[in-house]
Image (cartoon, rainbow, N blue to C red; front, side, top):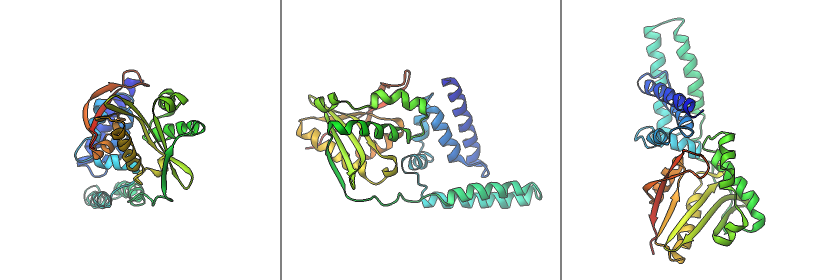
Length: 274
């Protein structure tokens, strides 16, 4: 199955590359499909796409917030319009109607996507987790992981690693973010000497893009400093690397996934300022 995902991912990269020079083929949707496949087969290819200077930011915007920037919308719609005109001038009737159909479907989809995430609801409060919160918090972690496009078997394989237990409360610090009494975020921090480990930082998918992750991390950083930690380590999902880089994290290596055999994840570090 891993090889099938790899082949499919390379195929979608090929289509996306053609789309970069042939306006009738949309590039970003094919690259989104490629990232989906590479997440299950090749972390190296997944990282290459997400870190691409042109396409990476657009893909991360869509994955993290389900938004398309206005400039990207205008560019895409203008390109599709030019393609329709070009088709009429070259291939003519009736084949040009194919380009009109593509323009109508893909153009409508692009034009109707959100440009900015909707306004967050209520005031965000962050409190220590209680044992009775752990089941709900664990399910939130799984929903948030699935937000990246992972399929059900993948998420089930991650269930044990993403499940919070009473021992996590005893041996670490688990915080819950609430908006109007609704659980919207989870952070799990462990301190080992001068090193803090951010084991979990997950946000309810519908609330991603509202700054809740930043608020929760501010508390994580404060807790790490109070505990005497000199640095914070996180083993990041490849698709969350951009988020951590914005916080100041640097990639220092890689670690094997605790859930998926053969999968390697970026290891990142941030010095704790005092």
